[in-house]
Every structure is written in structure tokens, then in C-alpha cells.
Length: 284
View 1 (cartoon, rainbow, N blue to C red):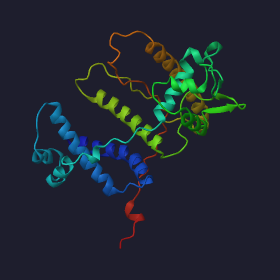
View 2: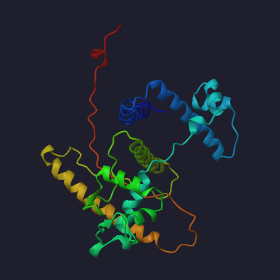
View 3: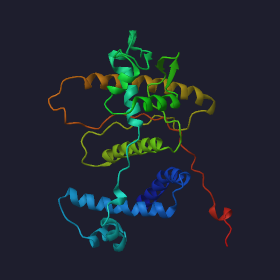
View 4: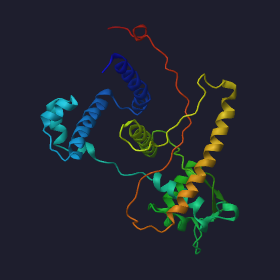
């Protein structure tokens, strides 16, 4: 490992971890909790690599490869409590409802515009039936209240409801649903980058950024933001329609599935301002 490689690696990790640590700090996660989390992740990865190679591995070997003290390795592998997966939030179910409302012909009017729906009733074309036919189960009343609170649907008179957005936007920062979305988005982006950085990977997956090297003049930023939102929404809507259409096609093996999709994000790179720490800290 050359000095240049090491310097770039450390600098890259610092840039990646800073926004993550800010979120942890806002959420009240202390350094000791984060350090314990990292110990577990290092152990998990070493064990997973051994399992993938169909090999068994000792706690001593795990300690050597991961750098985690052996006593901590023994403690972590003796209990699976820290590996428990929390109960999924309603976020994916709410997104699935909006997807169906915008792509299922039963709930579309002329030119593919989503219909205003009766909240309930004998007809099969109402909000309750829309939710009932969605692939992820959720109580219709709970779905209605959450979508209404998020501002993605609105009442139309006393008996009907209309949809205002194609995507579900979580109304509360650092809510379980927002954290779940953050985890999924970061994992998907990281997995794409990891795949593209692996030398023996087949054709690389799309991961591209477009920007001006010298930066965009600040006065044009609002115009660019509007342009990106409009074009990005149009492109993602086309992909969403394509996925909905292909999902209705017959398949030879319905149970064989690939969890795949596309994400587009508009970034504003944060300034990496250097701070002379010693000038802001009092010893004592």
C-alpha cells in the first residue's frame, strides 16, 4: 500500500463518514455505540466471507483478520440479538399503493391520469380496493391517514380522494420510515459502487454524475433545480410505467425475482472546509 493510496483512502473515508456521523449525532447515537456497531460489522463480514467459501473459521482467526479483540468476537458470535432486523415500516406499502394508482388501468382515466376515487363503497374502483389489491398488505385506514399526513393525497369533497404525487415522501425527519429509506438508498448506492469497483465484475452498472467542473453559477441554481426535478420525474415515471407493464407479462418462473430498480439523486457537494481543531478546543 503506497503512501498516496493510503492518504486518498483515509481522506475518502473521512468524506464518506462525515455526513453519516452527523446523522448519527442528530439521532443521539454516541461514539461508543457506533464503535460497538463497527466491531459487529467487521466480525459479520469476516464470518460471511468464510461462509461464502464454505469454510469454518475460529474466533482467533476472526480476531486476526478483523482486528477486533478476541473477547469481543466471542461475545458477538455467541448472541444473534444484535443482528435482529426491525419490523418493516409502512413506507414500502405506501409507495406500492401510489405505484398502482399511477400504473393500473383500473384506476386511470383518459391519457393515463390517475382518477379521483371514492374512499370506500360497493364499486371495485375505490381507495379501499386500491389498497386491498396492492402487493404489500396494509390497513386501508392507516394507509389513508399516513398518505394524507404526508401530503401526497388530498380529500376531494367529503367522499372522494385524489392523488397529488407519484412518490411517497416521509413527513417526519429521522422517523423509522425515513431511516429505513435512508438505509435502503445508501445500501443500494454502495452496492452499485462496490460492484463497479470489483475487477472481475461483468458489464458495469450505470452510475454516473453530471456536473460542471468549476461549479454552477449560484444565480442559475434555482433554474437547474427546477429542470432536474422536472426531467428526473419524467424519466422515472417512464421507468415506473415500464416496470408496471412488464410485471403483468407472463413469466416461466414467477418465484425467481431480482430486487432491482433505479435511483436518481440531485447532489450539492458540501464544502470540505478545514478546521484548525486546536483553535476551538480548550484543554482542561
